[in-house]
Length: 271
Image (cartoon, rainbow, N blue to C red; front, side, top):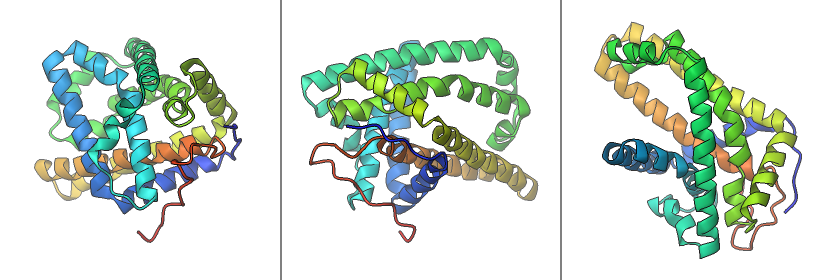
């Protein structure tokens, strides 16, 4: 395993690669993300605060599952829900490392979101916007909601970059947790320019979605239809974003992974 330094422009390439990979198996990605979201909502519904904490702690496992899903797409295999449990099928040492990683991630993310709640718009004002809005597009295009989303992104992004590479390093390279976090932090810092453009690229895509949703509202003032279209587009973009994590992770290290993890080809624009 050896750290690679990449050009800042690679961040935009990762965005493009994620979109192309999702284009090859859109239903596979969206189904995987949908099932994961349903499981998360069920946990939060049944266990409330404990469920929310558990869902947050499981985020690194979800990242690894989507990374494995993207590797399957690039090697010509179909996405199946079983990719989400592959980290749990590893040996005891890796399962323990994932458990510790999830706990640390949950604590760090909780702190970042708590800080965002203190510094951002009034939570009651945000709740009123969601309650009074006639459709989802009206919520997304509200300046206070966008301000809150941007602040969440700014505060949680450093946490994400610290942990981003760790799941793959633990599972593929069998790196101990402390070293995995250290290598992940160094990889993100040394390639910060690429990750800045990566984040800006996805923020631009999300902004384009919000603008498009606003235009649709003016052309087709049918809340149910607008909600359905916006939700479908949001799920597709979320799937593409998670798919792009594979490229952001493997591009920062030389492909010195175990033999069963071959270097995959570039996603095809023709798929």
